Image 1 (cartoon, helix red, strand yellow):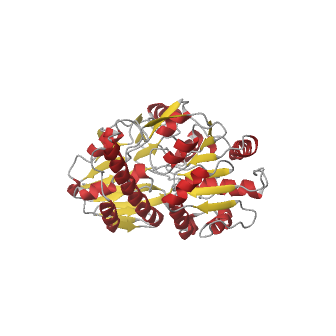
Image 2 (spheres, one colour):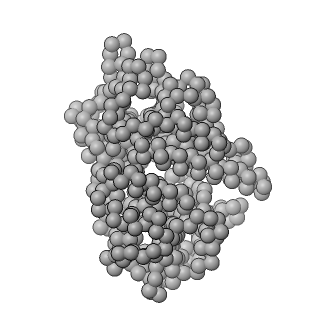
Amino acid sequence: MNITFLGAAGEVTGSCYLIECGKARFLIDCGMFQGDKDAWDKNVHALDFDASQIDFVLLTHAHIDHCGLLSRLCARGFRGPIYATPATADLMGVMLLDSAHVQLKDAERAQRHRREPAFEAEPLYSVVQAEQTLRHNRPVAYDVVFEPHAGIRACFRDAGHIIGSASIEIWLSEDGVEKKLVVSGDIGERNRPILRDPQRIEEADVLLVESTYGSRDHRSFDDTYREVTEVINRTLNEKRGSIVIPAFAVGRVQEVLYVLCKLARDGKIRASNGGMNIFVDSPMGARATELMLKHHAVLDEDVLDIFNVLAGRKGRRQHGNPEIRFTETPEESMALNRIDSGAIIISASGMCEAGRIRHHLRHRLAKSQNTVLFTGYQAIGTTGRRIVDGAKYVRLFGEDVAVRAEVATIGGLSAHAGQSGLLWWLQGFRKPPAQTFVVHGEPESAGALAGKIGEMGWSGVRVAGAGERVGF
């Protein structure tokens, strides 16, 4: 039995692991690389193997760095099933179609202006190919043991990261010997709104554990509420500006809306003119909110009240909520640029690499009365990371745009567990796995988590290397 670390090894994005067991070859995740200057080239060459020889795929969740190359895999000859939880299967359709559309628009823009040469190649896949990928979906509910291939059993457990996210237990049999492989997926933080806490797993022979925040913890949620309150009131009331919030359409948009609605209901945030206008400028974010309600059984009970108000009720104020509008058309999105002050604009993508957020940054970054509020992880090499790291200018649509707006980072809304949360999840194992590979983290974070796991008395722990193939 062998594992090859095709992505998310020594870095956060591109999650993809090839498992070979007896006559079976399958992938766990098939994600897109994002962020650094080599990301496009990595995506082009990520699947340099015979895709037709892959028997099936197990998908941990629907974020694009975990599912974003599935359509390319299918286009290159994959014909097998893709197993995921029902919510992940639904969200995958939204994510892949949006990704294909963004790639097409980026390629057209680059060719039209002869800029950003990395995008002068054809898109990684088309909208039609994204649609065809969905035919491979085979949804399986949490806690159901199923058999994707002879001699292999698997089970999804709730990872608490985004709706539908899963850790995966996999039992592999070869020559009469059975071994259990566990893949953490992305682990969420405990005691957070919207999603249930992650499930812990008790046994594994081999473990792959994520380390996005393996070197640090997040602020408490009380601190997060206080920081968000201060930023919003300062921007809207003292500076008379507007706030731009880059947010992932799946998970982060909904959590930001929950926090804003709760703070408004509690009278913590307000606009000096008596009104506060929140715009969700992400069609995918609106669809993800609707899908979240469809799968309400996996949500915390205390959030359903707010999300029932949001879904399908554009512009209506109920139960103390601020006015929230979901924009759909490009014209509605462009109209937001005519609002000088008092607006909170939530838009994708979360790392500012594509989508409508880049237009909002171009219009508002250079004005000191505005604030850009980051609520999630920004990968190395992304526009969001450059802004967070203090860049004086960022490149948007072929132009250098000055960064004069206030830049605020709120770490407490991360969908990833911090170091303590990861260690809590790992402490659920009754005995240490024989082999533990730390993945899905930048070198500092992965190394720090590996050290902490070693302090727990575990042996056989190390950081996985990109492209490395190991037996177990």
